[in-house]
Image (cartoon, rainbow, N blue to C red):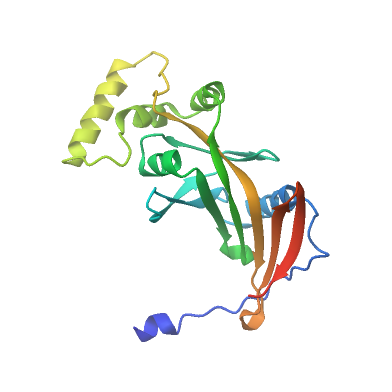
Length: 213
């Protein structure tokens, strides 16, 4: 292992997290942390890693953007024919991970995944920038392409075709909602003795526990 990697270390010391600190409702706890992230970190605080697995149990992960959350769950949008879309078709469960380094925090969420309604997807699609809408039409996400120019040609063709017109939402594009069954809130602490507070759904109630780091 290169010494430049083995010597990379950071001492976490900003805050602590106890069972007394957290809300009994994990959605409210997430909202509190998310609002702090919005005002404290650079970049996109709604960026999250979503991990899925196919019918053979092989996992894959990628970064997507959280576009809505409530006590119903966490919503993101994608091409239904993408790798994650195919994974979710066969195995409708996923894990989410938010990492907010400036706050020395991460949040893990696990749960069942469902498609949201077509109208909800269409309403959101209509709020996207025009060029993002065209990009969604032009891209067959996760499919092999011979060269980038093929994608760019499709983009420019559609840009011209829909000039001055409303851009339709692709039929294979829309939203998913992750319905949580598990939350974990992680706060970095000194000496790698990090704080980990978990919420597990148990008979309709949330059981809160502290986990060893």
